[in-house]
Length: 184
Image 1: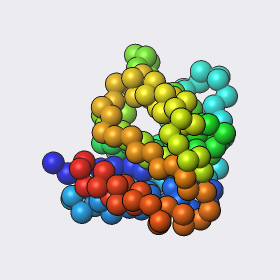
Image 2: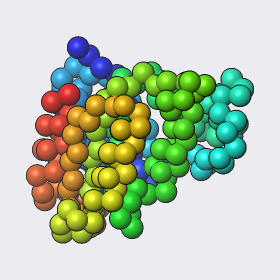
Image 3: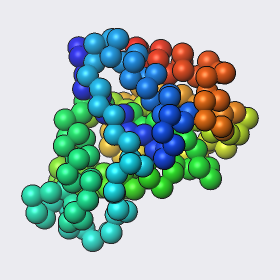
Image 4: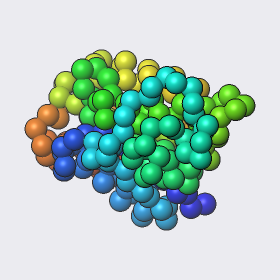
């Protein structure tokens, strides 16, 4: 069955390693017949959650007037699956994608909040460290997020040892990301 997949990227570097991984995932998913939207969080204005609990008090998911409401929310609401594709910054998600993740609050489980259509998710992450250990906190955060939303995890792909733009090309990361996309 064809899905509509939303890939959220977290890197401010155009054609950086995680951007290349996102494109490889998208290629695989489209080969399998899925429709894919790519949202580059670093290229949009998304403020952090204000903690005001005014979610959905108007016609928009948030009282802030930024790209979350006007661009990202419609993509989120149409998606059957979310894929987070991001570099590792300081043992966590970069601020750009973290702001978007924090703003998912109005889509939570509480009865007064609106539900997302998405039931599945995946994480594709890369970073300069040569081993997986520095990624553990970010992966644990991702796992708590999917538990909270009740999503089915379709895969976690970690590509260590990539720092400079294009380093991922000298690994099997692009092939693995494309294979993950094809497996959906």
